[in-house]
Image (cartoon, rainbow, N blue to C red; front, side, top):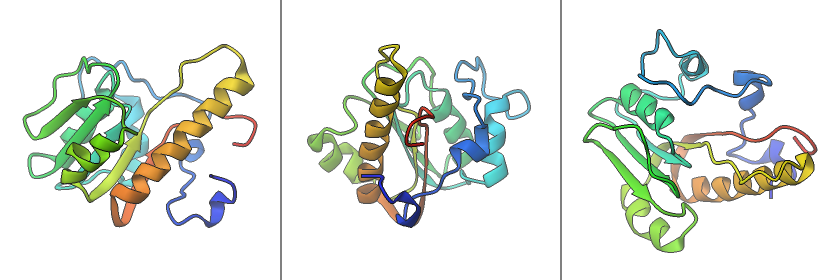
Length: 170
C-alpha cells in the first residue's frame, strides 16, 4: 500500500514536480529532445542516463520507450511491456513484450532475466469509467502494483517514475 508513502524507500513524488497538472504528450511522431516538451522533466532530473537498464511498464504506444532508448544508448537496455502492441519502432537493444506486467510467469521469466534495472518507468493507466473517484482509485492501485514490481526489479539505489491520476489521496 502507498499509505505512509513518504517513508517508503522507493517513494519519490516527482510527477507533480515534473508535469504539474499537465499530462505528458505521448503522441510524438519522432523522438527529438529539442521538439518534445514531455522529455524536459526527464532531462531536468537526469532520470535516464547512458548505459542504464530500464523497465517500461505500460509502454504502449511506445514513445516513452523510444525516448528511454535514445537516452540510454546502445550500451543500455530497455525492456518494454504492455497489454497492447507498441506502435513505435524501437532499436535492436530494446526488448518488447506483450502481456501483463504483473503476470508472475513474466516477472520470473523475461522481465526477471534482465533484472536488476536502474530505472522503472510506469505509464500505466486504468480503463477509465468517467467516474473521477473510481478512475483515481484504479490509477492508485496500478501505481501500487508497479511499486511492487519495482521493489523486486530495481537494483539498490534504483529510481522509479510513475504516472498517477491526481485527486483523492494524491
